[in-house]
Image (cartoon, rainbow, N blue to C red; front, side, top):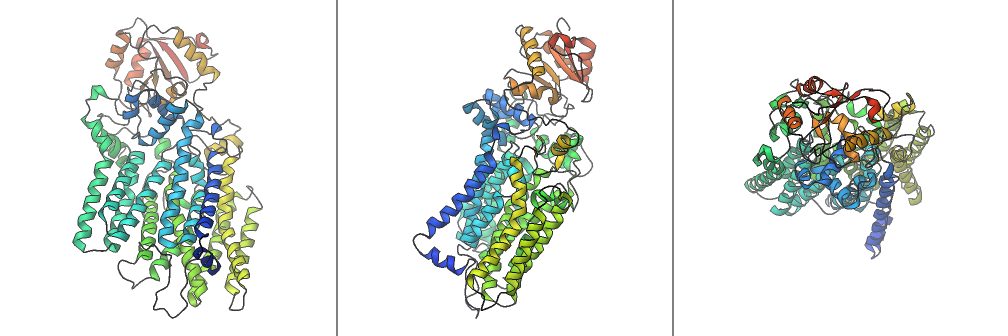
Length: 639
């Protein structure tokens, strides 16, 4: 794609101008230009660092992932295969790639919450930096800085970069893949295209099939816009596709080739098959009506029926404020960016850029709208596309505005529509920052009118003031929602990190007066400490500290100790591991003594065996006044 900013056709009789103000163009021609742009980028990265790191030691991290990364940090075998406990008896119900950086951080820096979150911060900062470089090469310096700022201030991105959920790494790797594709289209070289396939394959390790959603877009853009003959483009694209497939399936093939006795049982499967884990449990079962696709275990209601589905998903009252503030501007940029460059050569770089980022946005919206339940934080993958379209679109609209003619109306129209859209999104949450809506509307009105009414006699400072008001109007609302992540009144949820006064974390804390559990590493509650002390005092050489019914009961103990814990049934509690005979063998060979059952997970043959063969332990023996939803069983002397 073109390395120069978006420009007019040289044959156009109107004045040629770049996608940045003329005063800034003159500045960029001087030797200090790079430094000034660098200073602006450093300010954006500094703002991102503050947003992502403020009080991360008190972050509400995901209980399941945090338990797993503590286990992976304690044992290299568990690290490679994604073992949920240090002994690696059963795996995560995901590919462990996204947790590898976190586990390494905990192994090096110690079992601290901030150590688990730190890799997410680094990944988020790298994504901002990489997007700036990519958009700059496509649409110019000003567009690159604006895209970086938009990504920095996307509310759901801020929430996730302060968390330990895999989507942050997915976003970084896909942004890097888009940059490599852009270079491949521009240079006609094979190596950047192979690097693009490698980045997509690594993204597969972070979020599996979701990483492949960009592949049709990447392939179409390359076939359409890359130089060379059709056969050469097809050949290079086929090699890149093979690279992406091999890197994507590397972990799956490693597990498939490993004897079952030498690796964990694969959670989410009834057949202990890695292809079922990836393509069934985490793939086909999320579409259609077959929860057991390819031998998968049925997912939990929480993970399959979040309510965020359908064509209005991205703009509903919870998801809309996380991601959709700049949607009108981005859509208008996509439409006009392609339309205005109709008739240009097939290899036109600016048009290819709009097709790349627009295709990214459209494909994800279509897939999410047709899957059977999405967490709100899934929408963070839309942020790079929205940011790039915003940066490139504003640069294009400003160029046309300065050139004059009918196209100059695009900039004020885009600003006005986006400000009105922000009012619609923020309307249901008027109690949150009640000053926000009037300020956005006022700035939007001033910017739109100022840009619309300016003429040849309008001074340059007046035009630039109208542009500044316009940009502030479209960025202020997402910025306020992003900053809310730093306020403990808006804690989000450990399993559903969202910004602002939405989501289960906010409603539980402020409507039901519940305490949000932050699931810190190495800091067990008094109740869990008493249980761990009891189990350790009565342990006499058994391999496992205890067995639990599903991951629900094991998570707080695994976060607190690197001791092996047998997680019966995996994440959902329904995975057929261990079988009842296998559980009996573990007890009879003195590898296991205690089992912890819960009424909050479905009964299984293994839990039925425990109830039949083992003796309940009085809760007072391990510091509790009542059983609650858990019952501890002692299986000593049973066969």
